[in-house]
Length: 384
Image 1 (cartoon, rainbow, N blue to C red):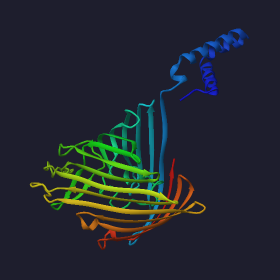
Image 2 (image 1 turned 90 degrees about the vertical axis):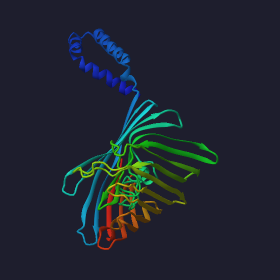
Image 3 (image 1 turned 45 degrees about the vertical axis):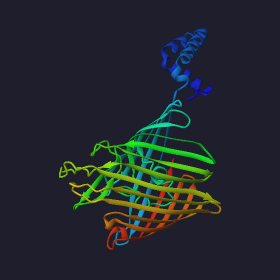
């Protein structure tokens, strides 16, 4: 923060008001020389207050909000999504950045739900390397770390398998390095981390889910190593590869029925691409999480969660309207939750960060489940 002339005068006036007794005495005596001396003294105080004249810290507030209406087959239409997600940035010189996102939602019963999506400390080691520590969005793939905010996502919903309890990790608690540097014929960006890893969910003697929202406990006592490498051979085009490996265990439940469970192998692989050509935006992503077998576990068999999507969007002239098309295939151990989906939508951009969306989802899942219900969604989102 720098001081302009107006800020300097404002500070002088503020200090003058705070010293009202001395000034009133000077004015009462109509002693202009005394008043000038008082002003000079106040100017000197401002000059000596280094933290007032220049600040080593910067503060920035951003985020987004969205309201969604959904109407699915065999269900009553409802405004089922109201979310406010402020994002805070605090930076000290060119050394440290604190970044954090809160998510505030209205629950089904009208209650207010709070979540800390991430809170990371970024220590800038040099122009190409940043040390990251805390809870951060998973760098596996593209969607979770770059595209999930409502005003950026071109459709009102996330691709099946790329949300909570899906095939793609959501967040991690740990530390890592990330950055970018020039490479032969283009640019290379990277993100590597070590973290507590996910927890597994079991029911009926089988694995049914992966909890990867980022926990501050480690059930198996083993860390997970992972990351992503992205390469940009030309502007507006990137390909990436992601992987993670380590161990995970079934999480103990609230009743303590699972006191402890043996650790098992845990692996993630993924690839992604994104690009633009003549205004047409194309992107796609594949991710697979696998938990190995573990003798003696409450769910001894191995299990895998896989999802992939392809996405295309195009802005129509004069640029306010936009068409979107996405196909997603998500498979998991519980066949009742697997899903294949076609989603088509049309958007209207009131401004680059103010978007209204209308979308139709054609869903194919287990008959009679929510995964098989077609749906219409309307959403208004604002990024600030």
